[in-house]
Image (cartoon, rainbow, N blue to C red; front, side, top):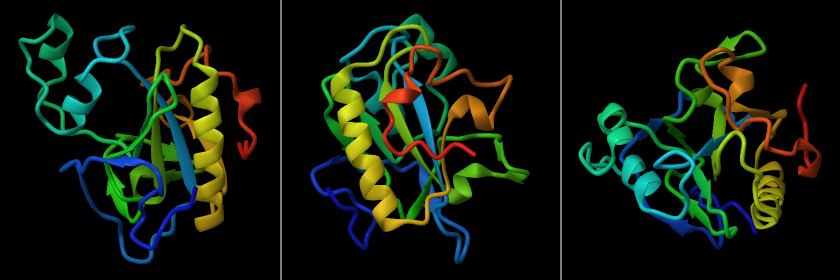
Length: 179
């Protein structure tokens, strides 16, 4: 796998999300943020995540959705439970995944990061196929960008976010660059 000049991952299924914008001028990608998501919570395989990232999540489709359907969020990538890689925002653009965040004293992590969502939950083990895909993607991102760290959403938004959670096994990441 490789990331092309447009910031698209070769082999990923690309579905353009409107929830992105330009990175600040001359802002390099230095950080990769690992997230965990399932919609509805703790349920896998449905259209909820895609619908959220495309602003078409219906508030009445599930009781949980009423509180999030209004959000305009996205990530660069989503890795499904079976290892399928989907891309919603080119890496050259800023995806709206980190929210209020800080890394090493720098705020606004969306400006200089790539967000990777893993379909999962904090307390449900992630699948081997997800780690395989994630490691391949991390290798491609490191080959393309000057990545300085791979962190969890909880690392850049402590107290606000808990993902990817204790069920995420950091020892299975080949390119762990934390700190």
